Image 1 (cartoon, rainbow, N blue to C red):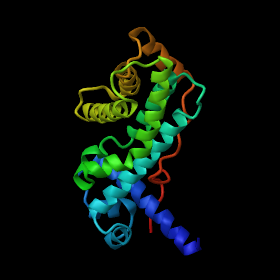
Image 2 (cartoon, one colour; image 1 turned 30 degrees about the horizontal axis):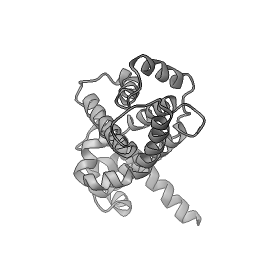
Image 3 (tube, rainbow, N blue to C red; image 1 turned 60 degrees about the vertical axis):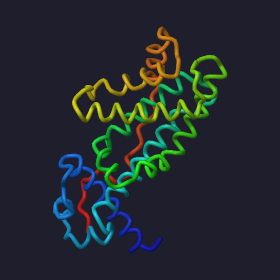
Length: 221
């Protein structure tokens, strides 16, 4: 990678990071407003993203990348009980997705539902594997196939993100609540659900830096 290419890549990531901050603060933020926040002219932003929709799509891709990594890290130990692994993966995924949850409605206006589902396939596939392991071990119980159950969990998490956005669920408790809800839906016995979540919380996945940018402290060129 040449120095010029490296610089352009860094500027693109910095614009994305600043755009994420602006869009989370003001969902209707225009490209002009994002450019001003980044300290650049509008032409610079359009040089990286030809439209607002393209920018939101790029942010969506970054969010999915973060979520995929978080879920994979949460289920990295194949010897761990499936209920604890599922709880840890849900907690890690929620901590990551919470940074982006206000983008859900924006992403749905720029990326089709089918497009979002396609982007989440690696997460769904990994979830299917851990659910199959739990069902086979008798730790989980459901009339659904592992793949169908993974779809249910995916939609539950989107619903919970919207509930937080709408003020129907306190963001401070949403992560553990999401983990308990996912385990309950997977058929973990009621007396075991809270304990599995506590075990997962005792050894959390280290939080990775967001894929969208470098923290938003610099100015793009």
